[in-house]
Length: 68
Image (cartoon, rainbow, N blue to C red; front, side, top):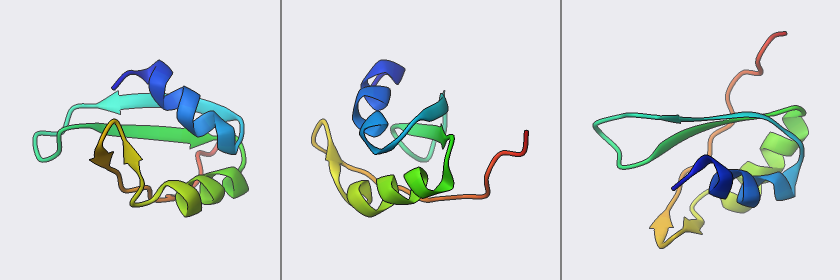
C-alpha cells in the first residue's frame, strides 16, 4: 500500500493534511492520515472502519487533532 493509494481512497472524505506510513511489527500495514477537519476524519471512520482495501480489512480510529 502506498501513500498515493491511501490518499486516493481517503481524500473522498475531505482534505488531507498529511499521510504517514509507519512500521509496526505487530501489524502488516499501518498509516496515519491527518485530515484538515475533524468532521472529515469522523466521516472517513464511519465509512471505512471494518472496510477493505486491497482485500485487507482495515480499522479506522479518530484520535486527537494535531495542534498547529
